[in-house]
Image 1 (spheres, rainbow, N blue to C red):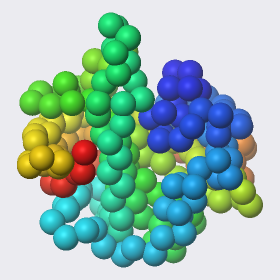
Image 2 (cartoon, rainbow, N blue to C red):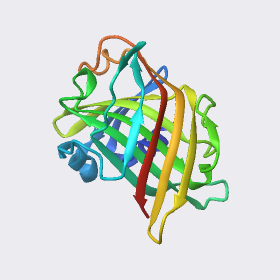
Image 3 (cartoon, helix red, strand yellow):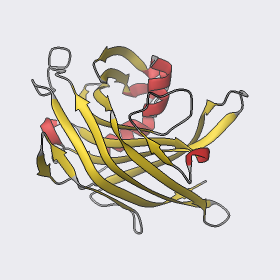
Image 4 (cartoon, helix red, strand yellow):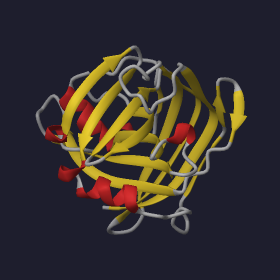
Length: 219
């Protein structure tokens, strides 16, 4: 996957990614926060609960041991960053369930489960183990972000297995009801310590046995 696509999936401008390294099943991104005011604001925010009416819940295991994943904030971005084969933009959503420090695992500044999808994905179940080819299926990732001055160093593992079913429907003139269920979602994070000293000095596996979200999005 090229850097431009990775940046858009991560919700940042491609020019903000000043370094990129591909590892087995994961990517390391060095993001210049000076070009990303929204991301900088997100890191500085101190929200401890989701907005009223929003739900994101999942079972979470780390190397087979059950642990809580309690999202403290939820980002919901409407976007049309990607184009179809007809070269027309496709509207979709970028969703991020976030745990900031000090509750993020492995001493990270921020821990995220991210989802990206276009509206055409709604109403179907998608297999996340199938290689991404154009816009044919949604995308999920698990990431740890470590701040270093004006930069955020991100270790991001892309889902290698699991399923995701979406139902995104209009809910009034300027809003949508966003709901989805996922199961068996697996992220294999390699040992990134050599390239990112703040990251854990070992590989690890995150599994989301079952989870769902129910959100309200503004369009």
